[in-house]
Image (tube, rainbow, N blue to C red; front, side, top):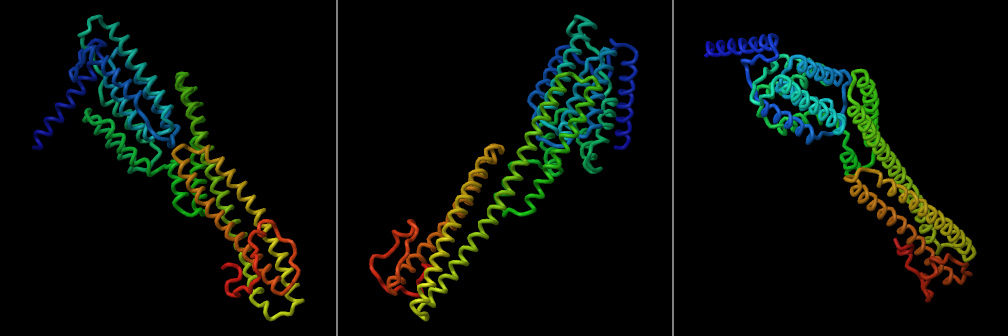
Length: 433
């Protein structure tokens, strides 16, 4: 078994060396490793173009040096291919490998790497056809293919600068080797595997942040998580701006620079949406705190008044009159505070709901439902306090009539609740509690 492996290894080395020698000797030399016809090359370049056109990824960090290496390495391979007059089949295949791996590792914006890859694939296809036409007008003539080892070395060098840990780098090295050894591996399978691993390193999903806020209570942890996301997005923008400067120095195409500008604009919009989410969380947290405090204070006041009403039998008529007038005054003041607070709540809720429309579509419905429930709860609590005020006011009116004390004018909201008949109230039921 070991003898077979050794023989096979020697044969592979001989084949690779033969390929290297053949490329150096002549542009028209036939490569002993593989041969390809014009129709195959043309179809392959079109296929690469289609892959770039249909590719899609999420947002994530980019490493400046890695991006620069990728662009320079690809450009160098294209230029070398032009000088040697090769067909670019393996060059195109290597670019697809770089594209699959690095579009996941660098993951900036779909538009950026989509446009860059599209432009490079177009350049590959056009130069390939130009070279073939120069070499021969015969469509079935075979042309040498550049060796795979040089391309593997280029990819290996770039992977070594991936901005993640050793384990992740090794994972990508392994995946790239698998792709080189098995060209028929499904692109979607490779993409999905790399996405799953990379998502654990960076998650800037607005929808996920919104879901976490809706599912849990609004705490400092939510705000800290959003602050971290804002910091990361801000870092992405700064790095993209540096990359834009590097692209100018490496003579990148205007299309690539324009795509990068569009990418920066998209990330800026993401940053704005994150800041809106943070502001919404802060406003909701503050609103709930105010609601709890004010409603608690109002209920405490009402409870004190009810206790005083329960002890009214022990007082004289004059004391009762003074006490009832004081209670009535406190009730009117409490009612004014509740109305003022109710108006403030309505204003803040309206502002929050207006800001919801600036969030990503997938998060709007969740937030709307969340704020709708919160609004209903606050309105219910305010309504409960107002109802208790009305019940106590009604009880005071009945007590005053029973004691034949002059009944002062009352707020319009509680007049409809006055009983027509004078009756002795049940002390245990005073206040409608």
